Image (cartoon, rainbow, N blue to C red; front, side):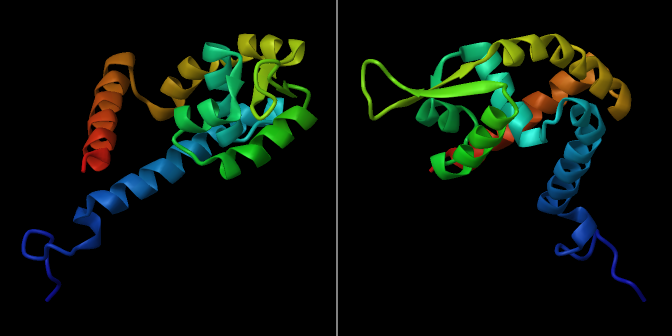
Length: 148
């Protein structure tokens, strides 16, 4: 007789970590066909979002915003630079700091990117209120995992 999730606290389908892992992969996969026309991966798209909101940013600031380490961000930046969407340069105030700025092409890409949220709402079958609720829940979860 199979063990049900109500009696088995280790049932895979009842684990929050499993649901989050599958959901994250599924949502990122749903972005793929939307981002492919402009040559972006989902992590590169996140970099662009950060820059459209906060340009210029140092590599360190960008890594902090994305909750990544600098070593993970650097390859993303190299690829975005090769695509012509960003430029990296040493800061005029501190040559140890590398600043990231959008190029004209990177700024122009924002017009396409502004269509992405509505496209994704449609693809995910969720409305603005559902997405706000989900975002609030995920933000609370992130905050809870960062507390000591």
